Image (cartoon, rainbow, N blue to C red):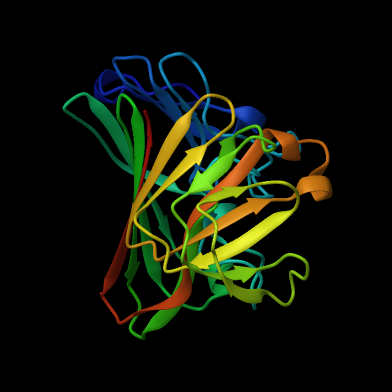
Length: 284
C-alpha cells in the first residue's frame, strides 16, 4: 500500500504496508518520537522515543495474517475482557478498523480510527455500535481516547481493556501505585481467582503473575528494568491488570510485562449514549 501524500503526510501521518501486507498508520513528531498502529485490530504496535528505544513489545510469535489478533503492543479487549460467551477478549482486536480523521495540534500528530458492527460482530454480539479510537503522539508521551457509542435501539453492556505490552526486563521490572486495591489473583488457579487486598508498595514479577486490581488509581508507575520509568495515567478506566505468563511463554516472557487499564465491571449504555476512557503513557 502506498503512503498517503499531501496533507496527511504534512501532518506527520502515513499509511504504509506493514508486516504481512497489513496496512498500518505511522505517526511521527518533530523531535523524532514515532508510533505505529495497525488497522487490523486497531492495534498500536510501536512507540519509539527520540533515542529510538521502543517502549512497547510485540511477541515473537505474533502473526500478521489478518485472521489472528496481533500479540503485542496495545491490543483492544471489547466488548468482553477475558473469557466469556464470545471469543477471548471479544472481537475488536480481530476486525479491520478504518481511518476516520487525522490532525496535528501544537506539533502533536494524531489519528482517529473507527470500528462499526458488521455481520462478523453480530454473530457473537447482536448489537449496533461505533468505536472511535484516537491516538495522539506527543514528544515524550502517547495518549489514547476510546469512545464506545450505542447506535442500537436497545441498551447493551460491555467490558473492555487495553492489553498493553511493555518492553521490559521482567526480572527487574516493578509497578507502583496499587497498594490498597482489592485484588482478584489468578495465581495459582486462573479459573478461580482468589480475592484479596494488595499490601505491597512495589509489585514485582518473580514468576507467573496474573492479577486484576479493582478500583485502581488514576496513575501508576512502571519501572521497566531497562532504565525507563513510564507513568501510566488514565481517566475512566476503573481497574488495572498486571500480567506476565512466565514459563507458559518461555520464548519471550523475560522481555515484557503487561500493565493494563481495564473496565472489568459492565458498562451499561442506553441507545445513543457514549462511554469514553483515556490512557496517557509518558516517560520521564
